[in-house]
Structures are given as C-alpha cells and as structure tokens.
Image (cartoon, rainbow, N blue to C red; front, top):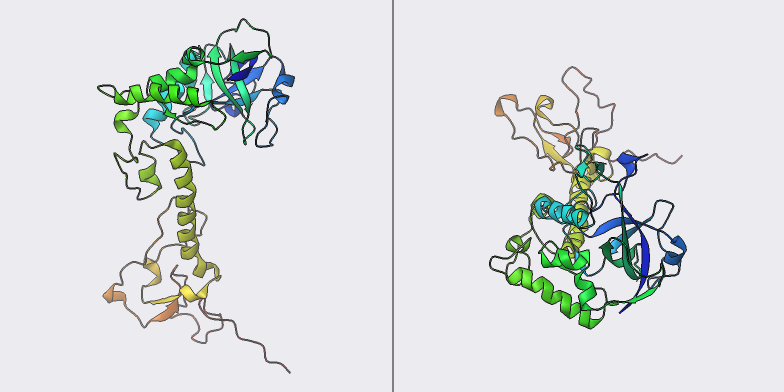
Length: 333
C-alpha cells in the first residue's frame, strides 16, 4: 500500500485559546503539517476537500474505531473511551495532560502543547479529515515522499498498538488493502482472545455472542459497543425523544388540539408546561398527577399539558377561548 509521508506536529492545545482547542479522542488527533500544500494533493474519494486551516487538520486513524468521548452531546462508556484517548496521547509522547473540569474534552495543560511526528496518508475522508497511520517522531524520508506500507511498518503505528492493547475496535475503509485488513484483524483478534481478554473486550457487547438491550440514551451510554453502531443508534433515540417532547408540548402551544383531554385536577397541583424555559431535552415527558377527590370539581376541557383554566372568582362567561377549542369562524356578510 502506497501512502504519502507528511511530516509535522501533533497539536492538542492552543496556548492562545485553550478553551477552544482541539478535542482529541481515541482515534482522532489534530496534526499541523510542515507542508500544507501536500494535503491539498491527496486523493479525495468522496469529493470533499480537506478541512485544513492555519492550525492544522484532524487526522482520523486508519483501521480503528475507539469508543466515543463525545458525539452529539453524548458519549460511550467513559472508562474505555478515556483510556483509548489517554493511550493515544501517551504513545504520541504527550505527558502530564490535564483536562478542564467543566470542559472534559478540552486540554487545560500539558508538558507540551505540540509533539513532532509524522503520518502516512492515502487520502481525505468525507468529513475533510486525513485518513492515516500515525507515528511519533521523525521519518527519515523527505516530506511528501511515497512510502510503501507493509505489515511490519503498520505494526509500528499508534493505530496497531491501540488495537493490540484492545483499546479500539477494528474498522476498515475499502481503500485499505486486503492483506493489511487481514493482518490488523488478527492483531485485534489476539487481544480479544487473550486469557483474560485485554482492553475493552471483556465488556464488549451487542454482537452475535453477547446481544444487548438498549432501553434509552442513558443506558446506551453505559454500553461498550461498536462505535459505528452507537453513532447510528443515537440519532434514532434523539428523534424519538424529540417526538415525545413535541407531543407533550403540542396542546400547550395550540399546534395540535386533538391531544386535549379532560382533567379535574386543581390548578395548584399541576406542573408547568414541558415547553417552558426550565425544560430540557433529557427531561421525561410529564404525566398528569392523580386527581385528589377532596379537591374534585366539575370536569372542564383542558390540555394534556394542563394550562390554567378560570377560577371561581373569574367571570363565568367565557370571554377567553378554551386552549382546546377551535376559534369561532367569522360569518360572511
């Protein structure tokens, strides 16, 4: 397999903007190439250009998929996710890395913000990232040289070392030659079949040998499953949660009066609208409290979100439209 050698530095923190710096994880790290023009010349099989700027470009490690430390405001099991991330940084030479307490994916301090290294890349992915095998230190070849990548050279990469330790799942792009796919699959299998299995493998589930039940997003975040499967399930669960909240809010906003029901619950026992300023996407859809017979009064038409209805001290003539009623039509003259 022929790859392009790119010399440069791995970057984990911006000294001038530390709270806006990179967010390395177990299979992605920022890289600042010595010759950015070489990145522009790499194959773009998806058609997307590289997402590179003056601070560098993200490198997606070839052949591995680590547990997600952050994905659409969620994450996977943090024990495995953080272990893979910390080991990646250690293998690249970073030491004494500390993360912000309130920004757990941003690096607050480290002995060095950048480390020299090199990558062997065969192209740019659909997200504008380099796909590459990554290595600490300098390569003897000239920048931009074509380097043939075989099994011994792959074994020296951070990618293969993470697989060998059981800190990542194997995940192969179609552009990776079959010989290297077979070799790296064997490396991963050795970690999984070890006695005892190493890394994440003792906790891995959602496969033919260990099916998993996913009840909700909270439960999903505790599982150790193939990250690509996790990234497919998360949008589904978020859409389902949004649909439930939308249904709970629909009568309150008047967008769907068909959801209106009747309730004899006194106003003092009712919850505020789930669409209010204190609601959150993780909140459970509220349910009406059980009626208290001591406060029972004649049923009135109210919405499932329980908006306020007139009290006895207010006029009995209904000068305000019911939240569940259809506005009267104007008669034509």
